[in-house]
Length: 77
Image (cartoon, rainbow, N blue to C red; front, side, top):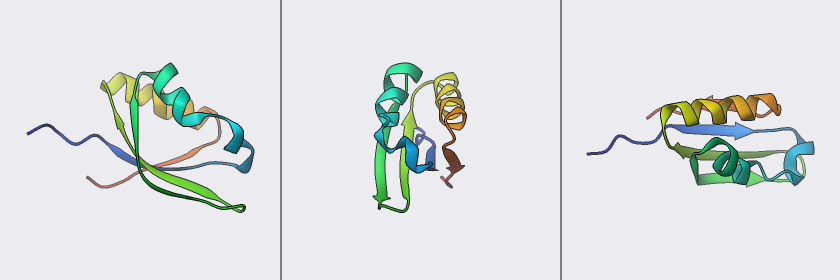
């Protein structure tokens, strides 16, 4: 049985809505983001995602998100 990819809840400032964050995670960080669920409203936005890839790539993705002001919380396995 393959281990489950780590899951995270991410939310960010309104100003990032026009930036292709999920695409950049894949292209620039080398992870495959799988969106499990989310909500986007005029007031707030959040996504629950799995990030599949080598550990270093997942760590790079988390740093990328943090540098852009995205809040990241690891979800239980």
